[in-house]
Length: 164
Length: 351
View 1 (cartoon, each protein chain N blue to C red):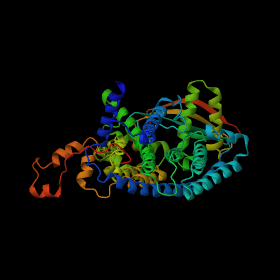
View 2 (view 1 turned 90 degrees about the vertical axis):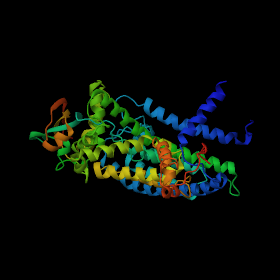
View 3 (view 1 turned 120 degrees about the vertical axis):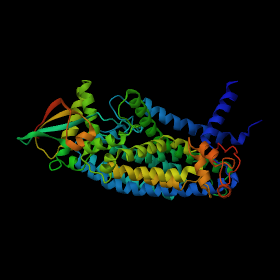
View 4 (view 1 turned 135 degrees about the vertical axis):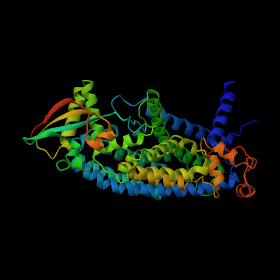
């Protein structure tokens, strides 16, 4: 049966629409750079996909602020009295720390130094000077929530935010 | 030889995606009705865009004040060469003004392009503090899709132009629902992997509890209902499985107009759940779900529970069999649920 030529542009639009939607998914999945969350603005929408009773989390452990030692050291997000980002529960810091630790792990010094500056200047601006570690925590989330138990704490690197 | 085979394959795929629902009646009248509704949806999209841009102007201004060190993503790298705080204010102002222009003149592609470009920059800015923020992504992609709306003549619009217009809206819906399907796909894949290796995962009873507890620990939040769900695994498990079902099969809903309203509300409920259980809000997502699905241009004027049940992905055929007159229903129930013969639903999103 012959196809109507007047419908050709419409059919083309319909086919292209399908191809573009499929292309988005392919680009979002295939082109995600290593260590990054997305190839902006193509996001693969992997949000809270991974559930497990054994979790690891990269976070900051603060050991000294403005010359005053903190004993025992405290995790950044527990310091709501001190840091606005902890008070505001800013999730961007978590993603930033993942990128920073990946840069340290791959010996990408330029990226690591840049991301360290972003962390110190944006998220630790309430402290003039600070000593802190970037740490990898391993724990059972439900047990840690109920009892505070952390199974393992591994220091990835120790840093000092110097006075300006 | 390949072309007819490919055509048959894609046709069958589209039919399968359309499911078991009745074909719509009076398709040409539905094009007119759908087109009118679609124009209202577009108007409201740009109105809400103006509202979102107005709010973004304030939040971006604060962000600029509080951010001494940027990690600009590619669309806004050029800002590094300019006075950042004032440039950001001008950028958000441009976003607000272009959204108003697109609202007033939705037929002008230039204004739609300008808004999409400005909103791309605002979205990029919100991701330029080192960590990604997905608040604006879906809204941005709608703006990108709407660039491709066909030109509509002022006088009488041809049926073909209306169909092209509706196809662009359907593509927009497909892209939005593909985001949810991708989210469901990752949860399913990691869940299957966990089952294979024998540990707790998305598909196992403790999956949601572990995710919620982990989120609370990472951010120090105390969501309203999180503890209840963490402590009652047998409540959490079916909830999480239902969520994965709704997300994973979202893409099928594009082709099943009887489900547009239901899925719109289900996904809005999901975003309510992310607030109640994780203190994560996606207000823009609630808006576009209401606009593009609850008020979908393709939603049927009349729907019966039967239409909805038989349209459900995976479970639809079982409902059709269970509700068919030969399946042991009482006479009263049979009268209440009249089962029409299955006719091939149109695979054309515009009809």
